[in-house]
Each structure stands twice: as C-alpha cells, then as structure tokens.
Length: 120
Image (cartoon, rainbow, N blue to C red; front, side):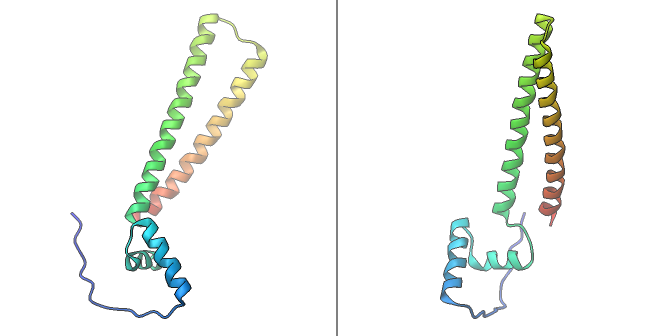
C-alpha cells in the first residue's frame, strides 16, 4: 500500500506564461498534477503512468514474438509433412530465423535497460 506524502513545503518558480502553459498541457495530457510531473522530472523518476505504458509495451512485444514462433512451428510442420523443402525457401527461412534471433537479443537488452529504469 502506498503511503501518502504530506506536501507542506513550497517552491516558487518564475517562468514565462508559454512555458507554464506548455508544462500544464503536458501534465493534463498525462493525467497528472503539474507538481508531480515536475518532481518526477527533477528526480529523474518514472511516473506510474509511464511504468504501466512500458509494461504494456513489453507484454505486446512478447505476444508478437509468440506469434512469429507459432508461424515458424507451422512452417516446420509443413516441411516435416512434405519431407521436402526447396533450397531457396530453406535459405530464406534460415535468414529469417537469424534475423529473428538478432531481434530477440536486441529486445532482451532493451528490456534489461527498461527494468533498471523501472526499479528507480
């Protein structure tokens, strides 16, 4: 359960009306209080809304790779049933597998970085 912090101290900032309006618009678009957005930015913390968005993205990525892997399995079943595959199809298939492997390695590295950010 999250404890509520009581905010008693005040900090007055002087900035142009344009900057204030721009910040306020960004906060409104994110469904945040301007104070919370500024504090999170200064402290280099992710907002809860950003965390949820990142986790949703990660889940979607997992689903994309699951679909690709399912397609690969279907191709493998077809080849096993036919007991034949042309050289050109095999070369293309292996190329796509290598590309998929590289993308998964890159994705996993990005996920490691994201998890480190989420831990802040």
